[in-house]
Length: 101
Image 1 (cartoon, one colour):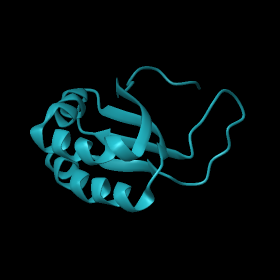
Image 2: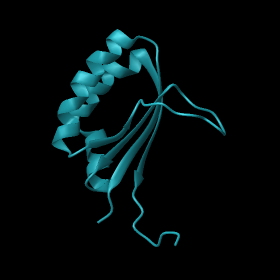
Image 3: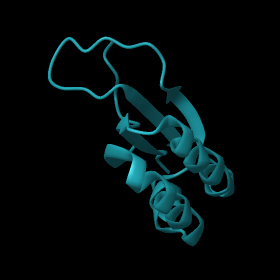
């Protein structure tokens, strides 16, 4: 079964209030087995557009990634994020096929 991922690009307008969202999202992320692969580190943007904060979350399955988003716990956390940020979010299934050799 393929892993699932959240890939997010975020603009935060109020860092202090955004911190409340970070604290609230810990519970649903833990419940659904999420693991941060990327969490707002250094980056370069050689092509296209970007936002200042980039996040990649790995879930044990694609279904877990979807279920986390839909969960009541995450929807409560989301209420804290929406007023203080703009986000592009993709929930995507991992790839387990052939790799370049």
